[in-house]
Length: 403
Image (tube, rainbow, N blue to C red; front, side, top):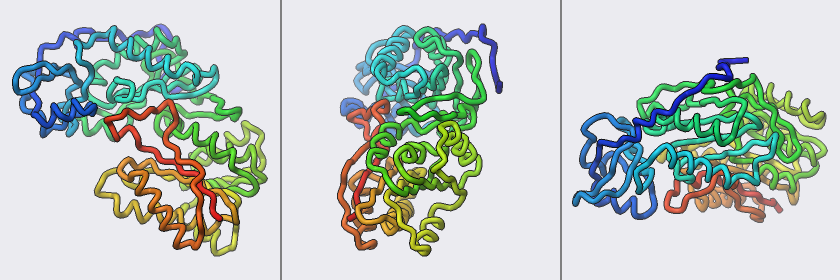
């Protein structure tokens, strides 16, 4: 057991935080942004500062009209994250948590995993809540959200009765908020691994050390959809802990999973063993180099999956990212047998879907292949897109057939 807290420990939510005494004024452009449905107000549109440090502030326009209430982040470029038009209370936070959970009720299998709260899309800005079987993992990614962590913990205990609640606030985004990176058990007990089942396949998830909150939940629906097209000999690039690879292995003659991370591949091999899958092999290596090597060797695959990390984490990285995305897709297309399937993803928000499709077409032209688009997909349904906030639509997953 790591960083375990006793089951009878309790974090009491600080309700004084909701006694809101401070306000800020925003510019006309900030008002227009709110009215358009986007909940973020940047520092340049904040005309006045609160009179004292405050995680939640009243927001008004230049005429003194109250617009609502927002999380306040004094050190962040995203200065305000709009929370509600009415005065927020712990009860309101609990009600929104409850509503978000109920929206996912159909996905909440006893040994399953899903995202229960997706921040702004669930009207709980900068708050992430994921469920892995009997355990809950939260992230509070702004100063305001972090201040009400106790309220969130108490509400989640009441609503879900989990065996343990873990915070995975060891993310770089918190540095922009002036917050420390931290992780640990907030309540209950969290084991070294959690076991989950996704579409009949069992995975061991390291909640304390794994990527994101332990697993790439946003690709869950895409893994299931992509597996329906897989057959024969398959290659899974950037396999991480083997999620796509194992879904393919349940339908394919053989699967090779490639990743540069030895610890991730160790977990992938454990996951394969959990399911008794002997037709999958995991190889440590640089994906770009591996694709070139397989092409030189004359290998062909019935299906190739590309699920790389974000190549463009900011707008300035887009030119290099475009080159990277085109390169790996070009190599993958050259490795596909006739009528082969390419499952390719980008989690770079700054690379729009149409731009991604254009890169895929360029790669197809250079590979001298015609391609059919079979499915244009996004992140799983438990990561809904909030209209008015393009940032919530970040994942693109395209399933292609190469002729």
